[in-house]
Amino acid sequence: MNPASEGHVARRVRTVETLLILVGIISVSGGTVEGLAPSYRALAATVTGIVSLGFLVEYLARLWIAPEIPHLLSKTAIRSRIRWALSPEGIIDLLAVMPALAAASGGARLGAESASVFVLLWVLKLATHAPGVGLIARVFHNERSALGAAAALFIIVLFSSATIAHWLEGAEQPEHFGSIPAALWWAAVTLTTTGYGDVVPHTALGRMLGGIVMLCGISVLALLAGILATGFAEEVRRREFVRIWDLVARVPFFSEVGAIAIADIVGRLRSRSFPAGATVIRKGAAGESMYFLVSGEVAVHLGARIKSLRDGDFFGEMALLDRKPRSADVTTVTPCTILELNVADFYQLAGQQPTLIAAIETEAKRRRATEAE
Image (tube, rainbow, N blue to C red):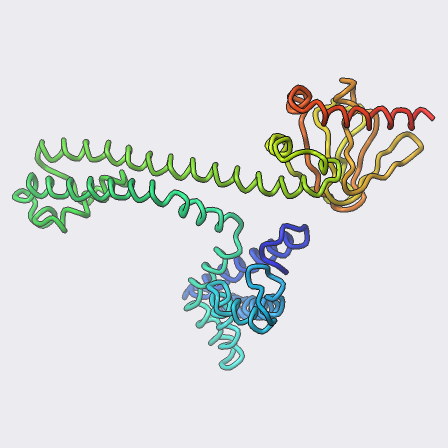
């Protein structure tokens, strides 16, 4: 199973893997409680061993399919497997199975004790499987210059406030402000607005400094949050654009449309996934969107007749063109990936891409004529 795959099966496998990791972490944590009944500790050790064994099976499976992962592709399958085994993900997955090896060599209790040592690695393993971790890493990489500038500002304010606090409070509280390194604790706690209250200034000037540092901390943290939020939104938009573009390229209806027109269309489409047996359109409902079928099969229920649509077809356009309620139910026969275009964007495209809308209208007229027969 390619970790980067976005198919239905791949998503389910990643969900199971994440749940398995969480169960393992919980069992390890429970096994370290001294006051727990022996039976419960034994159960935690057993669960830990089972989870570790599952990690071992997963490691061997990932090692076997490594040649199918595009970025690990090499001249031979063995080289691809070696590249994966030496990658950070491969090393973490290998270390995560150590409790299973320890249990096999020294008994279940030894496995549980070993698992408590490797619980941090299980947390790292969770990070490699949790969705969005790679996205966050990419955001930090893209915004490294802005984040570096904000971090430099934070350090400047931190050391400046610690130095001034040392001047103002050093004589009053030598144990807390007698040196700049000692005053850094107060400066860090105040600048981050944590406010533990274990160290507080006593002089009037020191308290004024504390208020200023708090305001500076709020400003710096707001700056960091703004940088990360903007970077995250941009990265999500960029990735979604690329993903939708790839899906659009698989729809034959868009094959004759130029790159500029596709770029305009991609920004308006939303990808949706449906399991088999789901209702996409219900008869009598308001027509708010039309749909392009990227993969899968849907059934259009036209009274006593059922019409099947497959990859590349589109549906739901008649309600938008006629501005009438839906005239048929549409259900999925197989798991489907569908692109949705809402009514507002549809009419905007009508003015910007008249050729595209004309093709949709032509197909709608043909369908009306077919249904009338």
